[in-house]
Image (cartoon, rainbow, N blue to C red; front, side, top):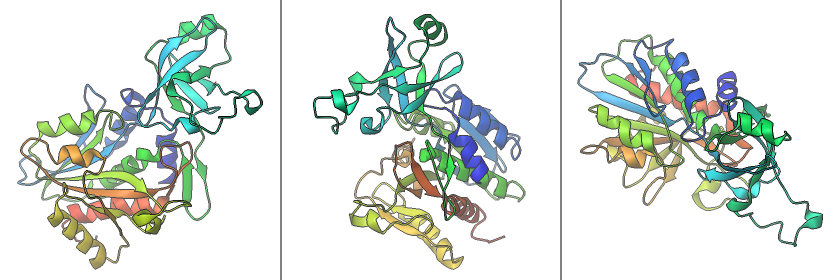
Length: 339
């Protein structure tokens, strides 16, 4: 699982440019399903079980990551970038990045030294003032980089103590890894339902995958997998009690199905699997909000992996939580039979 997470987090895949990670995941899923495809928007879709089954369950995790898009190349070869998704500009300055042009190029976001600043260096810089320096002559830059190319944060995934890892893009490559593992767990059993695994595009921007792909299927239930907030200094209220390594987060929300929640909760308790509760008084801010409203409505459940430092270069999860989500989904699909 650590290797899978490291591989996934080392790939690009900024919203709208998911091709590299989609290709990786499609090839991975082909080990377990002979019905895998990548659609026109880079959604990865894999089917399991009999097409004529009476019940169809959709498993969703978004495959894209936050990043930037190049909007200008100046005469000196510096790249003007704009946010693509919920980037925290406080964490952007002086960050190493990868520019996904004709080839991948390493660069760094320009930063004003505090000695030369106006004393406001602690404030988040305006997104209009972000530039990338590739350290290359302007003609080389312009031959390899085009307007609209994507840019992602760069950091090598690291292994921490106590089975934890830190990396860019764990939101939501951790969820993707859990579904890839679920595919492995259910591939060798006879299913009494149809399973559609959707690794969906553009959640960080327009939720294009979650809004469009479900219209191709008559879905009875959906389980969406994402990350959510874990306890760390300065985090209070309900998230102050969410721990890494203490199991998946089961969400309660007006838009989510209470029957599915109760079934999932009972599965955890029956099989002595730890779980944690997340309560949302309105929308969840995930793909589940859109899938629940697809067509004439879909019974939907949200399961989240606890994460610290979300939308940063140092996102942190416990690998056991990612594994636990895969095992829980497999149990749900098998009808609660632990095998």
